[in-house]
Image 1 (tube, one colour):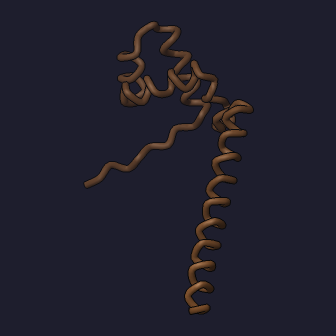
Image 2: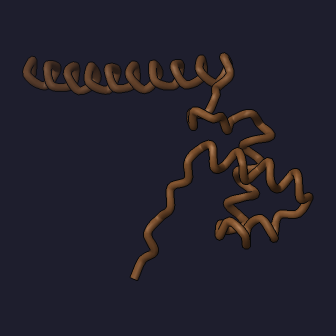
Image 3: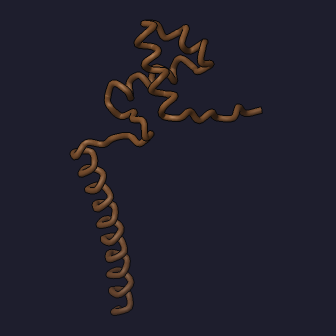
Amino acid sequence: MTKERKNYSPEFRIKAVELISALGSLKPVATELNVNHNTLIRWKKEYRADKLTASGVKVKSKEEQELQSLRKELNEIRLERDILKKAVSIFSKSDR
């Protein structure tokens, strides 16, 4: 008996946040749109942080993009290092 998760369009989310701003209260908007008030709070935070756009894609700053690419590169390098460590241990055992 699990509830099916609702997916709201980015345009709907933006309009909901604008409606909250216009009415000045969150509760009537949540009731009218049949959306959980915690969801509206999250949308409002995303909207204020400029992470909620009409295209639905969260906009990342240059620093966030660079951090993401550096983390990806670090994970790849760690994987390569671990593979090389295993290879060295395998070849050193065969020398004995």
